Amino acid sequence: MTPEQVDQVVVTMSRQVPDGAFVGVGLGTPSALVASVLATRLRGGHVLAGGTIDVELPIDRWFGGSDATNGFTTGYVSHFTSMEWAETQTMTMQFLRPAQIDGSGNLNTSRLGPVATPTRRFPGGLATGDVTQLLPKVVAYLPAHRQRNTPEKVDFVTGTGRSTEASGYQSQGVAALVTDLGVIEWRDGVPTLTETHPWTTSQDVVNSTGFSLRVSDARVSATPTESEQSTLDQIDPRRLRDRELLR
Image (cartoon, rainbow, N blue to C red; front, top):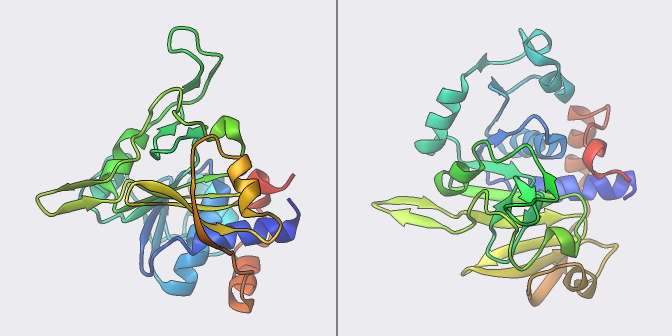
């Protein structure tokens, strides 16, 4: 992707964040961090990454540890507290980057191949098995949309994509997938292509997806507005977002 295409993908991710959301982000996902901060700067809300809350600009302070963020954040919390916030839905959304995602929205961040003889191992799920059922909204993203990382069924279910509703407690599970080709949303449990980026087509997305898609009235994702682009450049002047997406 070109830098302009990277910006479009990150802005598209940010539009998945509801107004006033409290977004939890992993430190190994700079694109998600930039998208979350962009959304909260424009529409209110909070970001928690690595126990650090609402770091002041520039965004790369989040990657410098406590020394870099000391005096530039409203505070720090333990992993125990952040999980409590997830359980009580004080935290309302999270981005996740899986190795695989299937047509049911199931996520694999653990391994590829048979359970007994995996061909590749990954760091594992950490809280992936929890947050998809705890948070009101989870959005997955893939820097490279290919059939191998969107199979009909993942090799290992690290986190389920299904929604949860019990005694007034609601979670959408995995609500959407944003990739370098477009946006897939789960509507009534069915993966539905809702957006394509200007450099691709609906057929390109279908051909690159290993599971079946409902394709109905997919629109072209809107280019960044002047406000989105200027804020994006302000919060991420060193373009940390390119680390995952630029190639």
